[in-house]
Length: 288
View 1 (tube, one colour):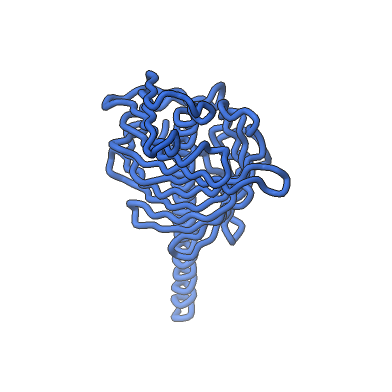
View 2: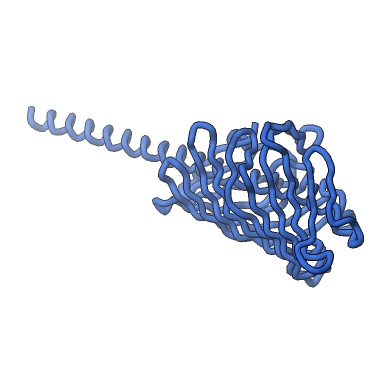
C-alpha cells in the first residue's frame, strides 16, 4: 500500500515538475517573442525617423547658395545657417501641434501614420561628405500618438574598399505609448550603403547593410542586449529583408531573430538555444 502511494506521489510530482517546466518554457518563449517584437518596433521607429529626416533635411545639401531661410508646407521646414557661412545648418521639421497624416512608402509597404511636433537637425555638412555629422533631436514629437524622446546621430565615415559610403549611426530613443507603456533603446550601428547613393534626393531606392549592437528595457521590467549581423534594410520595404539579430534578455536567455532570405514581408523567425521556434509578425506595436 505504501509502495503504491509512493508511486502515485512520485508520478504526481513528476507531472507537476513537467507542467512547471513546460509553463516556464512557454513563459520564456512568450517573453522572448515580446522582447524581439519591442526591439524590432524600436528599430522600425528609428528607421522611420531616418526617412523623415533624410527626406526633409537633405533637400538643401546640393544648393550651397540657397537662401538662409526656406519654407515648404506639410511639414513646415525651415533652414538657417548657424555659423559665419552656409554651413553648419539647423533644420527644423515642424508638423504642427495637431496630428498630420503622413504616408510612408508605397504599395504593400505603405503605411499612414499621424505625426505632430518638431524634429530638429543640426548638420555640419551634407550627408554625403566624409566626416559630416548630423545631430537629431525631438520637441513634443509624436508618431501615431506615441511620444518620441531622445537623439539620433549620423556620422559619415567615408567610402570603404569597394567604394560604398559608410556611416556610424547612433540612437538613444524612448517611445511611450498612450497607455504609458514604454521601451527605451540605445543602439550603435554601422551602415554600409549598398544602393541608392547616386540618387541622393530619392531615398526610396536606398539599401543598407547594418551591423552593430543595441540594448533596451521596457515598462514590464525586462531588459536585453542584442547583436545585429548583416541586416539588410531596403528603404522600399517596411521591415528588414535578411540578416539576424541575436538577443540576450536579462535572465541570460539567448534567442535569434532571423529576417529571412530577402523577401519584403512582415515576418521573422525566432529560435532559442533549445531549438524552440516561433514566427514573429512584425509591426504590431507603435505604428499601425
